[in-house]
Image (cartoon, rainbow, N blue to C red; front, side, top):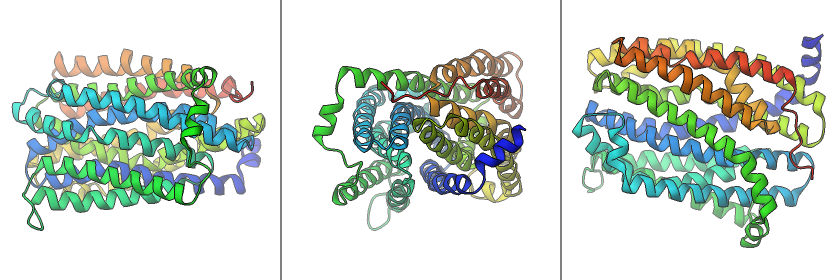
Length: 457
């Protein structure tokens, strides 16, 4: 009975729309992840200290980026439901408020990175060289958080109105300019000095600025629905609208921040095994992000479509489509995991500066990640795609806090510090939180408690 209902609600046009929204988001996720991958690849020609430094610094900026994504997710929930209810003014004002709040949070993170870079780097490594290189990179790249706020706020708005391809196109412009500027500034081309890790940081900042200017310029030139004005921002800065936004955004932001902070702690735990384990994990960070890209794309696309259904008060369709998406994610995860495992030597060959020992360790990490992708698909689809579509943000927060901070992190820390486990065994323990989330996520989706209309007064 359940399966027949799922099939009837997900056949045909639903799958087509899911893929149409998911593919541009996937490409955007890959391009976003490839920025740090490009830095790691190019700096990887210089040495393992540079790889470790940019890996740690990139993880720190990733924590802030995830926080900003959490802030914009509150806006994304509202915008998707406004679009489902055919409220165009609500869509525009929701996007304007999302941009304003994200920019405020971005400014706070810039201040933190500029004034405390060495302390942040010191959380994960005892190496003076890695700390110095990473601090230099972190201070310069901190400015890109403002660009991330601008791009992320517009990206969630464009997804909500089923036009994710626009933000993906301009992300493409950003990544191409980043690759070119990296090549020029890291290695000193066209008469420029060879700046190494500092050059990678400058390239990241400039390419981020190019992406923001071209995206916002295009939207205003075309008089797009989301091209909000100062007046739109003023009209949204009212107590009731800001409070509603924060009620959705703050639990999600705390959730994303706690999760990303947990990833940073995992990095610090791996740092206990030395620079070799840290370098291997730094290689894995962008590889992992790219491997998860299509699942992330599907989760965000499903959040849009299910949010549209809830906004239109089609609750039965939303429920069965949620079940269908979660089943589909298992199939996708198996295919991606198999591809990653088969292509692992191509990945490893890209990092020529890795020592034979670090390469062998990274190979083991890829095997663990391949299995981990299958383990992660259901929690990711449920939390990012289904539960947040209905604004069920507090459950997501509590579940992540318990699974990661009370189970996953303590286990990995004890194994690394007291039991002296090998890096690959510690890496396996990073996945224990996903087992907890499987049970909690499936139970919550089946309960239907997440089916809430957020835009009704």
